[in-house]
Image 1 (cartoon, helix red, strand yellow):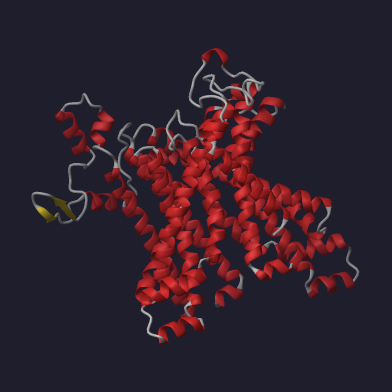
Image 2 (cartoon, rainbow over the protein chains, first blue to last red; image 1 turned 30 degrees about the vertical axis):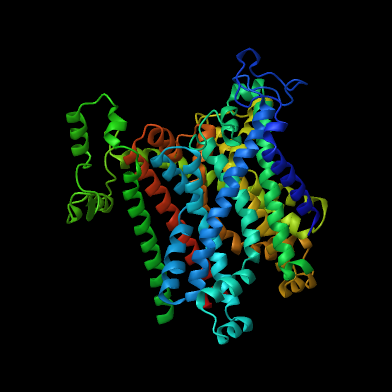
Amino acid sequence: MNRLTYVGIAIAAIVIIAAIFAPLLATHDAIFQDLSIRYAGPSAQHWFGTDALGRDVFSRVVYGARTSLEVGVTVVVVSSVIGIIIGAIAGFYGGPLDKFLSGYLFNVFLAFPGLLLAIALVGFLGAGLGKVVLALCLIGWVGYARVMRGQVLKVREYDFVQAARALGAGNMRILFTHILPNAVQPLIVQASLGMAGAVVSEASLSFLGLGIPAPAPSWGTMIDESRGFDVLYNAPHVFLFPGIALALTVLAFNFIGDGLREYLDPKQRKR
Amino acid sequence: MKHKLLNFARQLALMLLVIWTVVSLVTLLIELVPGDPATSILGETSTFEQRANFNHEHGLDRPVFFVSYSAEDGFKWNGIENQYVDYWVGVLHGDLGTSFQTDRPVVDMILERYPATIKLAVASMIIAIGIAVPLGVLSGSRRNSLVDNLGSLVALLGISLPTFVIGPFLVYVFAVKLRVFSPIGSANPEDIVLPAITLGAALSAILTRMIRSSVIEELGEDYVRTARAKGLSERKVLLKHVLKNGLIPVVTILGLQLGVLLAGAIITEKIFSWQGLGLLLLEDGITKRDYRLIQGCVLVISVTYILANSLTDYVYRKLDPRIRLS
C-alpha cells in the first residue's frame, strides 16, 4: 500500500474517534445558541469560532462527524448486504433470473443519476435521517450487486466448488460457505469508496436542505448556512472548518479505497 | 451486418425499457407523499369542496393504477381510466401536466429554465477541456516531474472535493478576497465563470487523468518512434501525432459526462443562484411542494441523462473496434 493509504487510514481514524467520543471531545453543547457571540472568530474559548446563532463550530464539526459516519456506515452495511444477496443470486443461478436482474434491474439503477433519485425520493417523502438513509441505500446497492455477480460468476467455476457439489452439498451451502467467502474481497474496496460516496451524498442532501433537519449538526447543513457572501466576508471560519472536515473525510476514504484496490490487485501492485 | 443490427436493436430496446421504468417510477412517486397533495398545497384550513375541486382539476380523483387495493373491496380492476395512463398519455403528447402552485403548464416552466442549465453545462465542459488538455499532455509527456505531481494533486482534489465545498471556496477567493467576479446571479456574461469552474472541476480532474494516461500509452507506440526518427521536433510529435490519438477516449467521456453535469448542476445552481432547471426543481418544486413540477423536472433531467449515456455508449462502440466485437 502506498503512503497516501496510510494518510487516509490516519485521517479516517481521527474522524471515527471524533464520532465515537463526540460527547467527550466537544467543548460545548453543539446546539446551544448564544446570540451575544454571533460569528466570533477562533479563540481559546471557541477553537473554531462560533456561527450565526453563536453555536460553537468545533463542537458542531465533531458532532457532524457522528452524523456523517452514522449515515455512511448504515448505508454501506445495508446496501452491501442487499447488493451481495442480489448479486450472488444473479451470478449463481444465472439464466432468466440473471437476465432480469443484471440485464434490466442493474441497468435501470445505473442509468439513473443517483443523487437525482435521492432528491426525488426525499422531495416526495419529506426530509429526515431515516429517509436519507433509505434513499442512499436505494442508489447504493447496485454497485455491490454488480461486483458480487462478477465475482460469483468467476468463483463458481473453481474446482473446490465442483468438489463440494460432488460431495452432495446443496445450493445454499455452496453459495454461502464456499463461494461467498471467496468472492467478497473486492467488495471491501467498493465499501470504502461507497463510504466516501455516502458521506458526500448525505452532505449534499443536507446542503440542499433535504437531509438531516436542523438543528442537528451535519457538515452539509453547516456549509449551506455559511456560504452566503456576507458570512464568507465577515466570518469565513464558519464555512472553512466544516468544509475542510468533509473534504478530508472524503479524501481519506477514497485514499483507503484506492490503496486497497492496488493491494488486492497484483497486476497494479507490480507497477 | 445482421449481428450489428441486432446489437443496435438490443441497445435501443434496453434504453427504451429504462426510460419506461423511470417514467413509471416518477409517475407513481406522487403516491409516496404523506397525506394528500391537496391538503399540503391548500392548507389545513381548506374546505372539503376546495380540495375536491383541486383533485378533480389535476386528475387526482381518478384511480392511481390499473389495479387498486382497499380493505373493504379487496383488489379492484380500474381499467385504463387511471392516473398512470393519464400521465403517460400526457408525456407522449409533450404535456407534463399543470403546476399545482402556479397553474401553468409544467413543460413551459421547464423550457424557460432549461437553456440556462445547458449553457452552464456547456461552459463547464469548455473550461474542463481548457484545463485538462494542457495539464494532461504536460503531465503525460513529463512523467514524475513537478508538473506531473502537481497535476496529479489537482486532479485528486477535483475528484474528491464535493461541489458545494469547491463553490463557496471559489466565491471566497474570487468574489470576497480578489473581487473579480460577483458571487451569485447571471446578470453579466462573466458571471458564468465561477459556476462553470465549480461544476467542471470534477470533470477536468477526470479528463486530466485520462489524457495523461493515454498520452503515456501513445508515446510508446511505433508511430511515435517513426515520427521522431524522421526528425520531427518533440513538440510536433506531441501535438500532431500523440494528442490526436490520445483524445479519442476524451470525446466519449465528454458525452457521458454531459448527463452527469446536468444532474450535478442542481447543487451548483443552488450555490450561485443560477436560474436553471435544478433551482426550479429545488425552489419551486420541492420547497413549495409542487409535486407535478417535481415529476416533470426529474423526468426531463433523467431522460436527458439516459439519452446522453446511451449515445456515448453507442459512439464509443463505433470508435473502438475492440469493444464493438466483444
